[in-house]
Length: 78
Image (cartoon, rainbow, N blue to C red; front, side):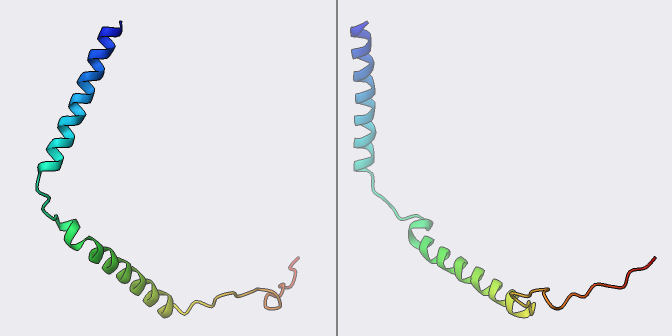
């Protein structure tokens, strides 16, 4: 049992080493997300804030309204 486990452990370790070496020698070219990711995120956040600001200011919502003192009961009909 031990020789089989030891052989499996060596295979796993060798695979990890090969993967690490392959990644270390490759040239990293910036992708679209590396170049423009932050700007796209900030632009989207700004657009989101602008749209909701426009919506909230044009709807004329009365915030914090309370029905106390404004609602009167109607007459009872029999």
